Image (cartoon, rainbow, N blue to C red; front, side, top):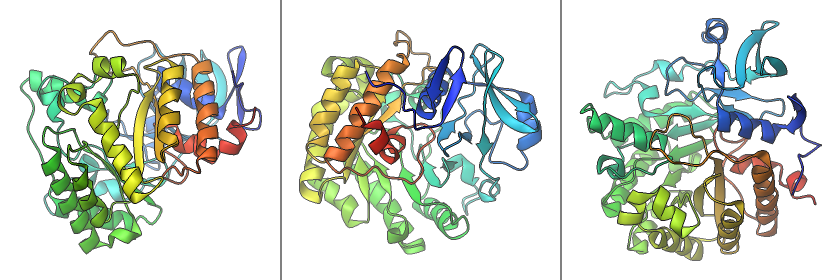
Amino acid sequence: MKNFASSLPQFRVGDSYLDSLDLKVSILSRGICVHDEIFEKFEKSCRLSRHPRSCNTMFLGDRLPVYVARTGPESPFHMVVREEKPAILHNNEFVTEVEFAPKPSFYTHKTSGGHLYGEMAILQGWDMLSFSYLWPCALAIAGHPCRFCHCGNATLQAVEAKQWMDFRYKPEEVAEIVRYAVEMEPQVKLLQLTAGSTLDPDSEIDRYVEILKAIDKAVGIEKIPPVIFLTPPKDVRLLDKLFDAGAGKIACDMDIWNETLFNEYCPGKAKYTPRQQHLEALLSIADKHGSGRACSVFVAGLEPVESLLEGFTYLSERGIVPLPSPWMPYGVERGNLPTPPGLDYYRTMRHETAKLYLKHNLAVPGTIGSSVCLSRDIWLRKEILAQP
């Protein structure tokens, strides 16, 4: 079992010392109670919002981005103002100060269609522009969301409450936001395009192509080649349309490697876009377009670490980039899901993943990393984390 990385920033949490990646996982797994005084002092000057769906991000000492996963006071982690600065406490004991990104003008603007930029996209981490839900998840609407998925479960709850309204943002509106982020917010370096899964992946690809063409017309797709998160089609040849239109990487998220658990936790995918369909799309991209062009997110913590790493090894050997993201249980009400594992699980996972990234020369998209994912964090520190 790989111990914490002593060359990373260390923090005393209770009776233990945690490195920065340990602390990130702990907060993502257990959430954090943000006190009102934080918003009162920092909301006007920092990228910080009380809106429940905002992607607030804090940064630890080595510029490690961490999603401010707000929960109630039941979390052992609390964020308070301490000596005029934001600070994290664990069971009322000081852990560390954190910082926020400066407040941008991004969220004050509207598209030509009247949508606030923040309704359609978020700034995540330090310099990532993410469209996280370009259209609703058909799997959730059909009553089969992935059981761990916050967006899918929110959609299903809205449908059950008869509050759901379909939406599809116009490609031109997406392009307007991308252009602003590239030209007026020059720190944006990575574009992610994500939507709900569909029952018709062929038409989903056509929708994405329209968006890519609009972005190219507005700003030049080469300035910010996107990572597209996609429902895999049955006919893998259709994926060429996306690369021809300027996609940088394509992710077909398997989420779970173990086939039995995939069917259990991803009932909609298992029914409409089975595990093998995801795998065939990823293998085709890597074979035709080269190593590093295909990616897959995995929800680390929902399956034994041995099966997770079996999947990472299989994909890495074939030029497909595994992207581990910690299981975050709060806010998901579709029950009987496991308790997040302890730090030994994540330390083993990051150690072996770092070795795979090095061995197979796999590049993870991004700069300093994502607020919710661990893949870029591991990639940036791979030489440290891969040590015996």
